[in-house]
Structures are given as C-alpha cells and as structure tokens.
Image (cartoon, rainbow, N blue to C red; front, side, top):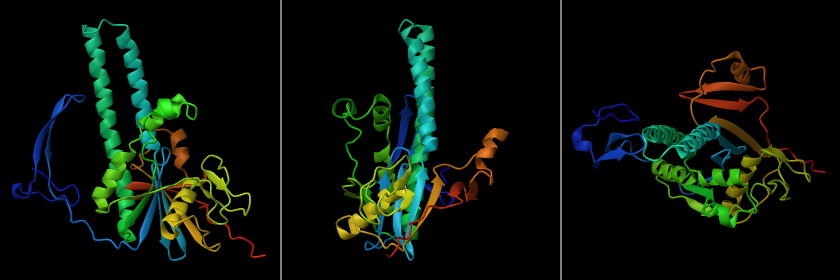
Length: 313
C-alpha cells in the first residue's frame, strides 16, 4: 500500500508513475521507489521576492519584505553538523582498525560492514534534514506568495578546496565545504515551490551594513556596525542585503525605522532532553525558550535583534 506523505490518503495504482527497485550498497537492502503526484504546486506571484543566504552553520536564511519591515527566518543546522560529526568519527575509527587487518579477512569484513551501516544511517538522516530545511523555506515562500526566489551564488565553493583554497581554509573547513549538501537543498526547494532559483553575487553581503552600507567584520554570528550602531544577526544581514540587491540592482539602504523580525527554527523536531543538564538548555529562565510549532520546534530569542533606529540628528 502506498500512502500520500502529505495527506495520508492511499494512492491507488492508477496514480502511480515510474517504479524502481533500488539496491542500497551501504544499507545492504532493497527499496521500492514509487513516483506519484503528492500535491499540486501553487502558482506564486513572480513580483514578490524571497532571498536566501546559504551557509554551513545555518543552512538557509530566508528574508522577505513585511508590511512594517523585513521578516527573516534562520534555520539552524546543528542537527546536520551532529550527524556528520558522528559519521566522521565512526568512519575514522573503523578505517584505523581496518588498516591493521588483512584486507578481505573476517575481521576486516566486519569492520567494513559496520562502516557501511554508519554511512547509510548518516545518509538517511541528512536526507531527512535537507527535506525539512527546504520545506520550511518553501512554506515561507508559499505563505508570502513569493514567485521569485533569489539565492546567494556560492556554487563551486566546495570544489577543489584542497588546491584552490588551501591557504584560505584549514583542513576542518575544507571538510565541511566538501560535505555541504547545498545543491540537494536547492533542488528540494525547487521541487517544493515549483520556482526556478535565481542566483545572485553575494560578495560582501554579510559585511555590508544594510542601514548605512558601511563594511564591518562580524564577530561570530553577531553583526554590529561601527558607523551607525546597527545590530542584527549576521545571516539576517546577508539575506536582507541579497534581497535589496535583487530588487534594486545594488546594495541599498533600508528604512531606518524598518523592523527586522528574526525567527529561529530548528531543522528537525525538538527532542526531550534525557537529563536535567540538557533540560536546562531549553528552560524559560536561560534566555531562550522552546516553542513547539506543530511537528517542529521553534527557538525564539526573548530579546529578538531588530534594526536600530538611527538618530535623525
């Protein structure tokens, strides 16, 4: 029986499309893939724009124009980083043990099977995370009826990292770039919205102040302009600048009275912490509060960073 993943209704065989029987070499199992139309894609207004700033720490940060300013949604990528860290640690340990064994021996085959299981588990988890990241951005685009999605152009940054970027990045950062699933997230976003992505040069988008156009070097995820005092999240600044550049053709000052509403979302649902020490991280007394939103958890700062109004004088 095939069920619609969105509505839960049974999909009859007359609605099935292409059927494939695939063998997963890592998971060592067969899977049957049945294609069907899950839902009708909405027709969005191409006049309205949504800007996406991609990154490794926060995979996607989306910005749209709101009646009183801007609405920015930052999707946290901590869950994906945790999955990759566990996989890399397990693979490194298993490969070290395999190097001490004779290739093809019984112990070597056991280690190789464990390595494939770890890779298959991580691959499934990362695919699920990419689906949920793109779903949140797609829901934002559908809610605001944005038929034009502009993405900061970082294509090719993960290629030839060892040769071209050896002086700029260390081995840890090169590994993160090589394992970045940016392309799959973009493909999922296109499939969920039916909108072809538009790429835009994002040079200095995270360093340029949207209020006075002064370039500053952010500290971590925090951005503060030394010229006008504007403060906001670094990724929110990048998404807003991409949105302004796609609209006006260049980085343009925003209204000093505009309100920047920043919303933080987890890529995957929040799990209940098994210990008191972890529960304290989501308590209401620690400056952050976990707010369940349907099947996902939204993490919202109690003091949301907003645009600082500049003194007219």
